[in-house]
Amino acid sequence: QKEVEQNSGPLSVPEGAIASLNCTYSDRGSQSFFWYRQYSGKSPELIMFIYSNGDKEDGRFTAQLNKASQYVSLLIRDSQPSDSATYLCAVTYNQGGKLIFGQGTELSVKP
Amino acid sequence: EAGVAQSPRYKIIEKRQSVAFWCNPISGHATLYWYQQILGQGPKLLIQFQNNGVVDDSQLPKDRFSAERLKGVDSTLKIQPAKLEDSAVYLCASSKTRQGASTDTQYFGPGTRLTVL
Image 1 (cartoon, rainbow over the protein chains, first blue to last red):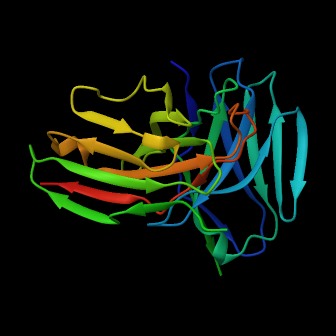
Image 2 (image 1 turned 90 degrees about the horizontal axis):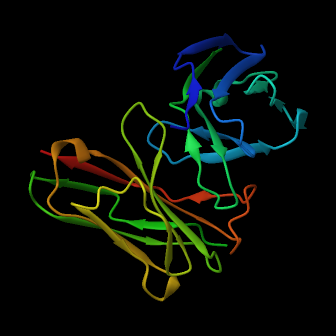
């Protein structure tokens, strides 16, 4: 059973701080790793994906991947109240593109 | 570019009734996915189509759920008969690549919120 685990939260950070969201996965055959943001009552929207070890930056967002530790994280710099949402980690295992999602971490950014 | 369209947005039914959801993917997207998202959980894949063929339906409860994608464009997901535990949001997503590359971006529709009473 391929699993993706996230802390459900809620994670609360003050405005302007760095929010750190973590995700672990069970299968070493995992190929690509995605972070989605989901506002309450809305559908998931892609923030970024990563497939190589190391860091990948996109604006205020940085994804970090460590395949040896089976760990992927998302850092949000200069957090804003508008970043308050549930963040979903997802993993693909093969060329088929099927996403395995974690349960999501709720982030709350306090003004 | 228009996004993924789904209808209806909300549906309330009694248990043992049937229900159908419709999805129109982004134009030109070969791969279509149906996910079930129960409150407080991440989405779970029910079925994946590539054009009009099924790629993965391993988690589809086939005794009550069915799906089709005739002509490789629109898709319909049906539940018959519905159970209380089917209450969830049903999300449709599509992606462009015919080969279903592992980095292919999936775009989600707004979802259909189903309540089974």
